[in-house]
Every structure is written in C-alpha cells, then in structure tokens.
Length: 88
Image (cartoon, rainbow, N blue to C red; front, top):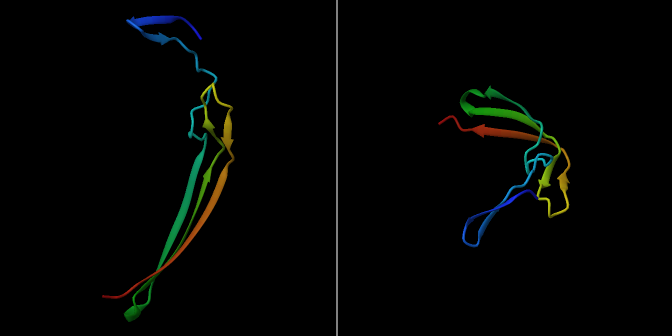
C-alpha cells in the first residue's frame, strides 16, 4: 500500500499499485465462427441449417489482492440449429 491521504475528516484514499493484476472476466482471446444455409422447399416452406463455434481463452475470475486468484479454463463451444419456416 502506498501513501494514505485524508480527503475529508475520517475519509481516506490509499494509493495502491494494481499493475500486475489481470482484469476479472477479461479473456485475452475471443473467437467466433458461424454459418447458416437456407434451403427453399417450394410450397413446403424454407429449411435452415446452421452451426457456430465460440472460443474464449482462460480468464481471471477474481483479481482482488485479498482473495486467492481463481482462473476459469478456456472454453470451446459448438452450437447447431435447424429451423423450418412455413411458406405463409
């Protein structure tokens, strides 16, 4: 802890250096990729197929000096979708 400054009677500000701490819930990398393919089915409507992938790198969950540091591991999520739309 650095210098302590009294800004008002009974109220203080302590100068603190957090240079080495990582931001909480701020991953270094995020990547997304997705696609959708629409297939017209004539008078039966429209069929859509799609998929997406999402990558999030490891991130700090706590970055407060008074608490033990906790990290969340990196995640890779895959999602798929199928939808049908009536022609009306």
